Length: 246
Image (tube, rainbow, N blue to C red; front, side, top):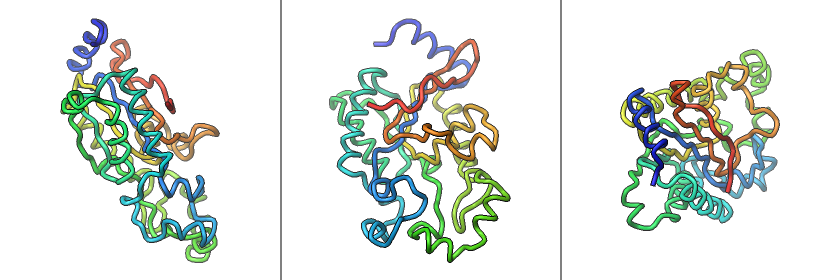
């Protein structure tokens, strides 16, 4: 049960038209995470063969990813109780991460959590180079490096894909929905690394330069928690922790 101060903060947040708390959770380790090892492109044909031809929304979690999700559910329940709403992006790896998190809750509590899908928090679309090796991408798009250098990694679009600026526009709609419909509530959302960068851009008023790339050591971890909570003195949602893992 929440203490009096937490309940009072909920009421203040509701009056201000803001959620009481929003927790963003990156999905657990996926099969593409495992194969690409943090790289933009596949290292070679052998690495690509394991996930070739599987669209991004159908990429599943690995066994490690499932374990991460289940441990994260235990952590979330012990520290934050249960949310009013739990969103996912509709991509298989976020659906499975959501299932792993809910595994920590007894059936009676699970029935009280309203689970919803929002396409606004889906991952950035990689475009035509999605299944390419580095060598193939350089051959297909010899102009890309110079284009990227000129326009910067926030505004520039990968061929056929989304820029980070494109992702910001749809994330903005999701955040506005939270402010409009979820005031005073505790809302969690299972999302993606690229999307999380755009979420932080909006919540923390980053510049374009800040959003171009994660600082060293700050890339979002699989099942890392990014926690925002309403601060009555600031009158807004404030970052309380980032990249917390079970």
